[in-house]
Length: 300
Length: 248
Image 1: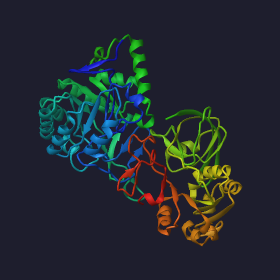
Image 2: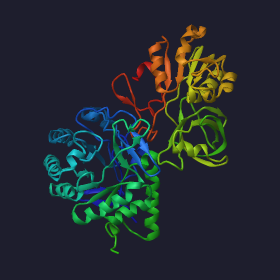
Image 3: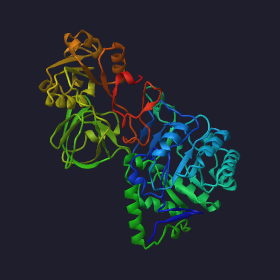
């Protein structure tokens, strides 16, 4: 039995990926990162961003709502101060959060020759910033343009992380695939509002946030199934995984890799547990590799 | 991050919405004043952070105030229940080399300062405590401070116990204030802002409370604005900061 997954020329030791924004810059808990299939950094912008004012987090039993707002050290400090400190054996994907085409050009040109960087995840989906993010990802035309530009600048794997907020993710997925993306990441957080009725105002410092966690899993499963059947590049699922069987569900629905996000905030070592659960499931069911079940969901 | 399966030995109501939890660990290393543990609850997805209020061998005491469903769940937990905890997390405070020092507590802010008072007492550092709250019902741990500090001064906003007035109204008039070498404070944000305006002329370490996501520095969900214009992680860089160094 092997958990290895191949996406084009890229090989991953298992289908688990640590999602952007839930594992910092990869400088801590490296024993977890080293066991995963891939790691995606916090979103990096051209200029440093201090992020949104607190409070930035709210949760319920099955959700997390965040409005961190892409707080990050910026490209220069990331490249000069953070990247040299990274010491992981797992493929490192840098989440790039540009505001416009020029930003993506600067980000990719600056990082494409870094040996430590295995590939890029284009963040066309952050709901917590006024420019870039979801504003780019809601239009198939803009998704196509950013992806084409990125494709023209690098031969490294390009993942495009999309949103389903106020747009049809089937069309933006097609635009990314047609423009040369290597994989689609479905999906970023859902627009969300928390209301403080006493103050009659939004609870979160930024006014609104992005919803994640187990509550969104059935919704994302559906999107992954629909898009993976219509688009012929690999889909990477991201939505509320907390267990090994959740990963199996996403593989069946059509995902080739599966990101772990909110659960990392409950336990930074959750990835290790989920990996063991996945292994056990494969052993018990006599599944020899993820390829054997990816997209194997049967019709009713 | 170390996870623990610990046992809730005692869950006692202290006052208005305030509970004291005594938790027994199977394995517990050093814990510094200011450090916190994260509690998994059955009511919320993320853990809830509580600072250590006291220690007796393998037993830690935590004090919580019910503010939402996570804290309500913990307040109703039966004695003998198992708890899923992570910690200790955050940076504790270093022991000062000389005293006297003063502990300034607003409401439930008394909790982490009690453990500091215990460690100061063990290290022979003289401490004074000024404990303030809105009402008598919210003035907690006063006896415990009494056994560890040279003097405990009480104050309530409504005058129902001790001096009448805000902590920052009473503090400047205290005769002992000129001898104090270091202040340690924990309370609501307006209290820190008022302390900043008082400009006590001596270091003041602020024990901050923050709504946290992970408690481990991964999510960037908690933040305090530093003098450098950047948000800093309360969970990993704090929760104790030099008051001079943070913007309120």
